[in-house]
Amino acid sequence: MERFYVTTAIDYPNAEPHIGHAYQKIAADVLARWHRLIGDNVWFLTGTDEHGKKIQEAAEKKNKTPKEFVDEISKEFKESWKLLNIEPSRFIRTTDKDHERLVQEVIKKCDAGGDIYLGEYEGYYCTACEAYYTEKDLMNGCCPIHKRPIERLKEKSYFFRLSKYQKFLLGLYKKNPKFILPKERKNEIVNRVKEGLKDLSISRTSFDWGIPFPLGKNHVVYVWFDALFNYLTGSGKNHEYWPATIHLLGKDNSWFHCVYWPAFLKSAGYELPKTVFVHGFLTFNGQKISKSLGNVISPKVLVGKYGADSIRYFVCRQFPFAEGNDGDFSEKELIARHNNELADKLGNLVARTLSLIGRYSIKNFKMKKNNFLKKLKLDEIKSKMNELELDKALNLIFEFIDKCNQYIQDERPWENKCKNREQILYELADSIKAIAILLWPFIPSTSESIAKQIDFKKGKIDFKEIKKLLSIGNIKREGTLFEKIPITIK
Image 1: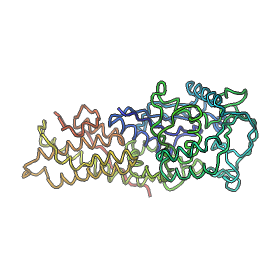
Image 2: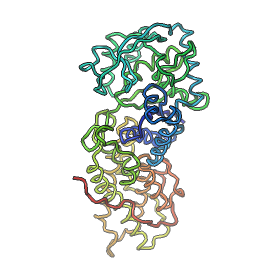
Image 3: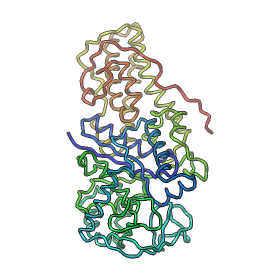
Image 4: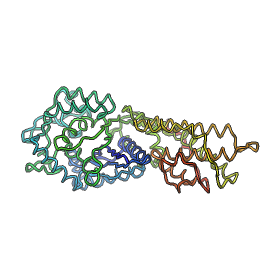
């Protein structure tokens, strides 16, 4: 068994989750399910990043302690992911005791290697980003991400000798071309690192909501040093799944993961992750997702309107994930794909096939082959999934669904003159089995429903079953897979 360890960025619980958060978690869950399907030993980590000045300020506005505040919001994230059928191996919180212990141990390891020293920090800091900026990074004196005025900090601080790792990092990027993907993101990082690196302040004294810094009193650990090590803490018993196979994160987090993270790991003596994959942002109905615009749509609301599988399908089919570009979560486009693809193509294929099998009381198939399955481009689908081309893998699966629908239309097994009705319906049922298996990472509830209706392996989803002939006793259609959604969005 190959080991596959996928992580997402851990979300900052200063506000409730929205569809932008969900996009990344859905992609990670799809990859985790896919690798389980093909027999890999899988670990999938997500969670919440719960320390820092931003959390402390958000809690104060709600008249709550930081711990009370993050307990409530973290629960919202967990519940949202459950509604979307996202099933991590562990949901980590940076307030977990095992994580706090590990962070303090790592700081001591870095210090033993001569990479930490006490100094004084003075510079620009954005609380919303929990990040430092140089003067040339600013846009009219404002944070380049949040477009709001930035504050200047001056305080005693422990520093990490990041400048020491410039040569190491450039060598890493050159020797491991897949360490940063897509290629465009790698080029951005390489060019910035070539400009030089400054030592990094990794402790704070201006607030106290953080992990106590083990080398000095009244200091807490800088949130990014704390947060990044969640991937190590959450990597299974005795770190059995480390190093990570792939980190998934948004482009606003690329510098921290591609520069700070490998430097920290090298300093502390840990192996490096294999790939850091940087995806784009989502807008919502053409607008940037923003609390101020009032368009922060909860995953709970969207699941209530469209169902988990339709949302999962849409974000994987609509956006070319592997390219790392931005995309727009359009409800109008979601409804169109739901109606035209999930309902009219997949739903119609399953309904027609199972209804015909029921009409002609075909109880026990005794076929020895399914020549039609040769039209399924299985190797190409596997290749697309390995390259993170989720949309293209779905295109190929639905290309086969189209062929199945055309086959039933051409052969017309409902007509009395059809001489090969049982063979045709068997090939369609066996092909539906393969479709359900391949779609399970994307739309698990629907796939499990199909598996139950055609009675294969008692509903167990297993990649190996694709090439095994369907052996069943009873096929029974149970309702409609996808009801049409009325188009009400202009």
